[in-house]
Amino acid sequence: MSEKTLTRRWIQKWPGRVNLPVMAIAAAVVVIAGCNGSQSSTASQPSSGSQTASTPNAQSNVASVRYVALGDSFSSGEGNAPFLPGTEVSNGDQCHRSPLGYAMQLHNLSGPALALPDFVACSGAQIQDLFSANHESNNANTEPPQVRRLSPLVGLVTMTMGGNNLGRNGNGLGDLLEYCVLHHGPCHQDLEAGVTDKLHFIDGTRPGNTNPFNLRRVYEKLRWDAPNARILVAGYPHEFTGTYADSCEHIDTTDQAWMNQVVDSLNSVIKANIQAANKTTGARVEYVDAIPWFTGHALDNGSTCSWVGQAFNSTSVNDLSHKEGFFHPNVLGQNLYARAFMKELRRPAPAANPSPACSSQTFLSIVMSKGYGQSVAPSGTPTCADGYAVETFVPYADGQEAQFFFKQDPSGHWTIIEGGNAVPTIACSTIPVAVLTKLGAQCPAMALTPTTSPSPTSSATGECSSAVFLRLMQSQGATVTSASGPPKCLNGYAEQNFNYPKGPTANYPTFFFHSDGHGGWTILGGGAIGDTISVCSKLPASVRAAFAQPARDNSGCPSG
Image 1 (cartoon, rainbow, N blue to C red):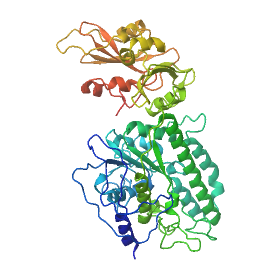
Image 2: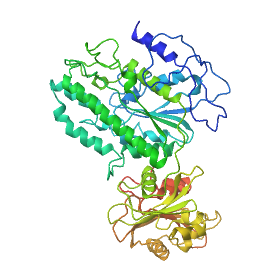
Image 3: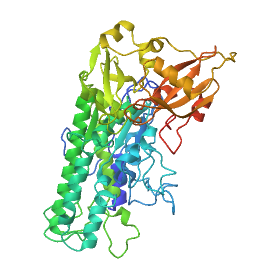
Image 4: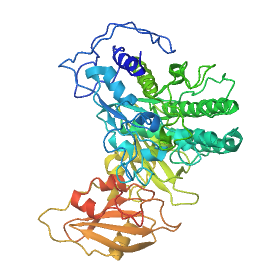
């Protein structure tokens, strides 16, 4: 039987109940029709023996769950050409999304319960590409941050990520293997130190790790952006049995064992960061272990290399034109991934964790998940009262302190109200005054008064000058020392940058004002560390566009 025929049967053979969240748009439990097979409760790979295929039948009263497929080349289906249109462009986008990738196969396995994936996984993607435009110059214009596809409407997120942060040239595990192939002999001695350093860099559980793209922050951010989704993160498989006594795919026997160790180390970091994110912020991210599913499908079977049952693409030292696909899961390997995800979805979704504690670690995790300064750190301890909290942070050593305000949601978890504003207008006007007193929050009188937009019929707008805005800031207790550059004014709104006694602010040193309609100005808010986000969201669209952050500095409204 051919591999493609076998795969088609596997795609059809896993009907059953899928425990996805019930979305607001669907007041019914999501069920995959055709539940006629027994469920295995073991964690090992199910038998690949024959089973009667069944085709899921759509139910008209069931709404499909929205599915976003994030990730790197193991998620995009690299090596399984032809690729989807627009993802294999000469001198252009090279994300290589395959219709045989596990995301597409998982959709087929799930029937009507799971929508066609919003497929943004990209070959070569690194952790930072989740939050920034793709780092590859040929992909930058067509591949925005992957997490932009997340929202409260998303019901499922899947991902493999981290492998590409370990490679010598940014191409991850495949890059390490390629080096070994071309080295023609033992190579791990050349690579061990670099891999260890890079594992430490992405490990958010290591004390003092300030890398803004460490995995712990990644998982917290995913939960923040997709609060109602099941989030499934898969590890990486072993590509060698570790028992073959000769070179396989041009990889020396000692290097085969070392590559398995690298995979084990990476998977351990992924699992540890998932556990930390789940414990601290209730991220409820689920780990999917790929190794049991790929057992028996390595590049060797212990006695033979490059055999019919392998789940990875072979190499060819004589043809490197498609080297990106070397050592990547082939169509069988992508099917194994799909089935691993499918089995996890058939388990009950994890219950919400107990409410995170009122602690600096809790609030630091929340602040980091919102994308504030890369080295922001708490200053002192938080104060909590009646479901609210205030914590002071600094953007860097000896930097300007700023208050951050938090509120517990109905489930007991903390969310940010406002942070980094020298005049915390939003928090001080929404938190009850009695609670503000208990928190010891610093709220100038103007911040305690809710602001209103100027009347459309009012024409009395005050003088738009740096001197006016500086006096207003200082009158409200802000520690700014001088204006930085001229203001920008439009339609009764103004934007002005300021300087601080301890130097410039970390991210967005911008403050916003609006006319009171009587010749004066009131403070909307602004960033001592970086919370122009909440302020900018309240500006009219035309004004927000005019105040957009220019490429040359960090002032103005941040993009996105």
